Length: 481
Ligand SMILES: Cc1ncc(COP(=O)(O)O)c(C=O)c1O
Image (cartoon, rainbow, N blue to C red; front, side, top):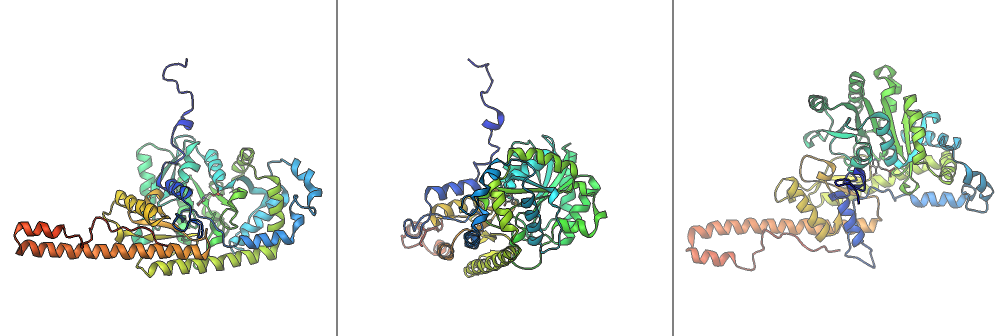
């Protein structure tokens, strides 16, 4: 018999800090239960809630075919099997770190320099976020974060570390830009509540906005961090997905241009190959810190999430091929631009507006006109209909902590062109029918008013029951492909 009141599992195990019970992950479950397939399940749910980059995978496949010696699982590379299978140094293979540093420079247009000695491995950016939180903050400490933000930060940065995330409010009227006033207000609010702020966490380019941060905003954040002696963690996981101007500015460039702007010990970059290369399954995450103590602590912690040596070896070879990475990044941007244009044009065709964006694997679209009531609940209701009836898993803004209802994130790079066209057809049908229903509802209202003025009460009741009039309460339709 246990001691009364004593749980047999930990608070971490029994709590819901993982965030799995949110609409963000619910949508994934809806897809898993009924996944779309053009032939076997044409009425299934299309996954638009997953920021995956599948547009250039065949280019990597071609490279691997042409370079069999890069893998220890081929007859050309198997002679290295023993050495690679035994290697377990948490510094990683020197060639891997060199190749990653070079690739990070290239993804930033060659404008930033990275020192291979500061490259620390982790299990994806997911692991990198947690490691950096462990290095910089104690349980109960807080990081400020602009909204809307990537929902899984609540898991990655907070769950096991006990660190809090406090919002910096951003608004659609200025394209969700981070303002100094809102930054200072968030900082003051935390201080007034006696919460110790240890830093600011940003994602640049932004997930879910798909926008790059302008140089001045970035400088404001760096200066603020320096003045308050707090950290600035920049998640630059989407740096190689910038497909249109303005060009991406990394925090590394800001420091390089003007080293006096900030104590480098306060600046840290999180990166991964999950988005720019489209290999989330490889679990390659990077912590790049300008702080020696953080580099050394993170490296020790990386024992919990090393990148397997055979993956390191393959990538050292692939990313060490200069011509290949130059062509790959250029082609990836070209395809992303093409896909983005096709998708946003399709949405504009039915009057759906997206935030103007130039990066990422998704659009931040406004479905405000389709909300029955402009609240977070109204947004979730609309989202449920879109998942259950239109059969598209897009993600509601509230799951990104967006404070304005009606915004949704739709991913467009994790599918082929035909599937995207099917998704657009479904959206078009849905919006058209919703608009028709709204028009019918308005007409009915006008009729009702007119009849109320001219008919006796009994006849008015009959009119309301007329079946030909569409109910304004059910403008929603089954998905059509
Ligand atoms: C902003 C951001 N950071 C981190 C991650 C996690 O990436 P990884 O697959 O490398 O763990 C994601 C994934 O979507 C992301 O969007």
